[in-house]
Length: 137
Image 1 (spheres, one colour):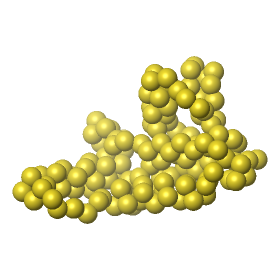
Image 2 (cartoon, rainbow, N blue to C red):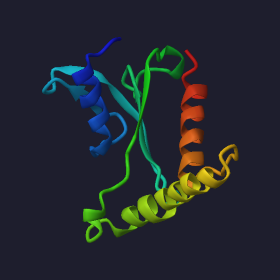
Image 3 (tube, rainbow, N blue to C red):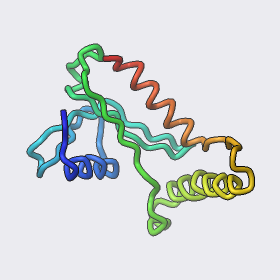
């Protein structure tokens, strides 16, 4: 299914919503259902937050019947939320983004070096691979 640029932006912004498994994910003022949340990822160790969205209701649809999967990864929590979400801000900005910045800085000195990914990147890759394995259509 193809979406317009605006719809793709709307879908991307869904990453900051609070969904539960089975919830419908809608765009266009709730007029278009893009799928249903089949899994919520909230890894407190790595800071990874993601939603696996499938084209059918996971309560009744078998994984082998799924044809479209969307994985929405939440971006970094705003530093402005340090008061209400201190743990999230620390995981995103100190534990992950700081390592990414350090890797970028080191890459200027050693341009062809491959640096270790963050724990959040590794966790996110596992989430994606797991979804691809589960929904192999």
